[in-house]
Length: 436
Ligand SMILES: NC(=O)c1ccc[n+]([C@@H]2O[C@H](COP(=O)([O-])OP(=O)(O)OC[C@H]3O[C@@H](n4cnc5c(N)ncnc54)[C@H](OP(=O)(O)O)[C@@H]3O)[C@@H](O)[C@H]2O)c1
Image 1 (cartoon, rainbow, N blue to C red):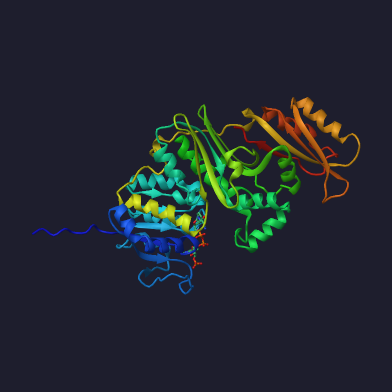
Image 2: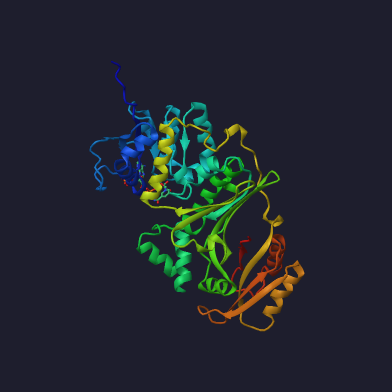
């Protein structure tokens, strides 16, 4: 009588036992039977590493081997895959990723900073070693957007991919919108509630969204990742008045990462945008993320869901592990590194659109005429203009303009003409208006 042998488990090591690491342990424990059925074999944690061995984590670590040095997890004989959940573009996370792949083991990571900076190097190493490198959780947390583009949308050409990629900024913006409170006030509350990091710079200055955008763009366009070329403007300069004026004009403000791949060039920008009330992204509130991809056969695809948090992010990490358990290696960026297109950055000046420009100016006669003359001389046509006293600063007036459709280069030229003008009390703020 032949004996059926059960399939060997996929043995994983976790580097990092914080929010996401803890979530992965809980998910694998709670859903172990269904994961084994779908993956064709069990997924088992064999080893773990973090900084502080004595820390209370609310999960039982006693079944797992402990390594003080996460870098050597991949060298253990009882580990098939290392899951890097530490973070940071360089340092221990990168050393761990390199060692793991060089040891011929697969790597799963949620680390967008590391993939944005070193994704190509790691992908080339993974291809050479014929091991998987997967990073679904690095973009938009629990939303399967990388799989959506790589697999479900694989037959399409994508010219544009854009979305709301940072939950902290979206929470701040939608709370400012609901309450009329200032940016600083809402940020402080978000930090107190744990929605924003103690050092929120990466989020509010747009860097985190830029990391994610560069990864999405590379996958959508089959191009070499180019984080350095992402133009990045965060939300720190937004005033409650901008939100109120946008509202009176029929828009909400959202931090949008926008990537376009056309004519062999790639445009990537993170910037607050005015989003029309009837656009699907206008209804993405709180810490939610959403990505829109426009395929030439699929039409508009909208991916929406929780962009962070232990459960959603663990869901994306474990989906990658299930793929690996099934034997899916795949090219990390959809096509092999050597075949990724070199797409130089496109200059934003070529783009056409409508813009919102907010000036803070001295409260004296002639200033409005000076602003409108600069617009006229640069060829910018003004659709509407709102002028209001700044409640926070006496002797200062806020002038908000919405332009007709025109080249972005004309708006830049108008601002250049106004540079150094004593009438301006602060640098103007420009936000694009999201089209259809
Ligand atoms: N949190 C989210 O919702 C979310 C969503 C998507 C992606 N991500 C990404 O997931 C990764 C992890 O995020 P997280 O929120 O889980 O971070 P976290 O809660 O701060 O946890 C980080 C973990 O890494 C450990 N660690 C730090 N430096 C280490 C080192 N040198 N050696 C070994 N372990 C070290 C920490 O150890 P101790 O616990 O001992 O201090 C901690 O367990 C990051 O790349 C992040 O960008 C997070």
